[in-house]
Length: 286
Image (cartoon, rainbow, N blue to C red; front, top):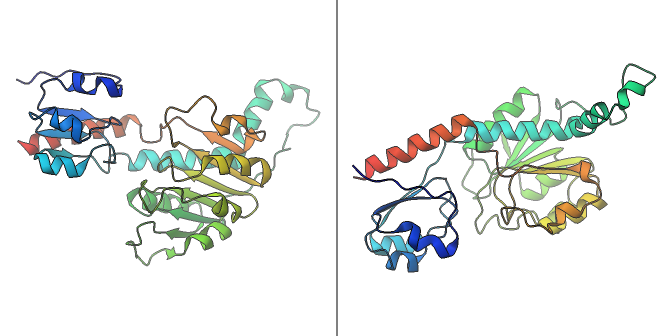
């Protein structure tokens, strides 16, 4: 019987003490570099409780003979659902109408309705997807049900399926009404949506990041939200938790922005699936 110890938070200076003499560790968002491995020669398996492996030095693990297992595919439905929820919140101006009603303004309205914030249907709009893996493809399926015209940009250049039109990034940015990002953070995607890219967005465009922080230049986006007719939603930031003086907290046009604290992946079902896959990874390794 193996003993299991849990730590809700591990600061960098706590990494070695939290690993202790364990042969198997489960980790997420904690840097496991070569120095950590050299200090823990007993390590046999690192289970990453997420898809991304950027916090583990994979070259060092191979040199040290340490197995590394990540988990993929557990959050596809959860992230796709969060994408639709965020898009609808921005297209329907839900925050505005909710505040209008809850502050009692509707009670003084001389007519039965109030539509000062106009909104449009999703049907017929052009929806561009950046990153066309499992999540991007699932979002495309849902978008098609709404009657959207679809296209995608492959950040790896490896996806070449023919069912949906593949376009270059500039075409996607300049022609799409809705843009959703479902890509990993790597050399191809870091700062992909920079000031120049943002300037290409068409008036009224909505761009959502459900991929990774660091794909969008947040300083440039904050500036654009006050200067361009665009809307932005994001579940991820370059630094998490959000820093106190983040540029998004300073924008004037706050109705153009929706931020969720990295929750898109975390439906109950997705978390249950994640744990099941982690357990499977451990069993399959020994």
